[in-house]
Length: 205
Image (cartoon, rainbow, N blue to C red):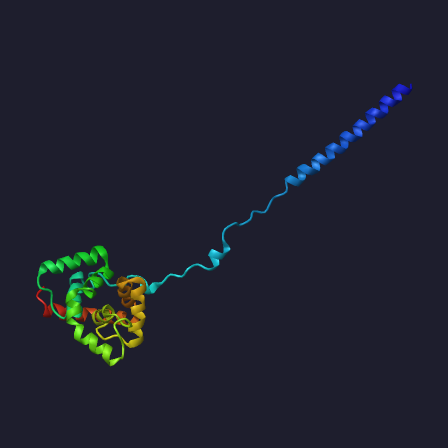
């Protein structure tokens, strides 16, 4: 009889332990079934502080045909930078190819850095430096020629110094693109068809 009672108590204890284990297991399962919030691990700093674009150094929005053609751009480059007309059709076609395949900045760079432009503007450049108490480090000759070719005038002192710093930092192509995006150059573009017509009347090629 005693043995039967002990067995019954032993079975009762096992049942209670098994019940507790089952409840705990269910609670654990329910805990892991809870949704976990996803975290955004992207760099919030980069989102908030993106480097702004520098539109001043984008290629100028020079109109393409039919408003006016690449031939006109080359003619005006000769007249503005070199103060003469192109000598023949071959050189015109060569510069048209530069404009179409390499862009406005490379066309401008070719004229600005040419020996002919340097010689043509040498006297005026040194007169400009003397009148404004400047030296060639403060306003580089290329900047003087760029102003003459793109804006058809001498640089103002602050502008000349500023674009000289850009030239030292980023090169003449950045200067050409920057001046080409200026409000003053855009005003020139507004009347460019008149310049094109005058150039066509003035130049054979």
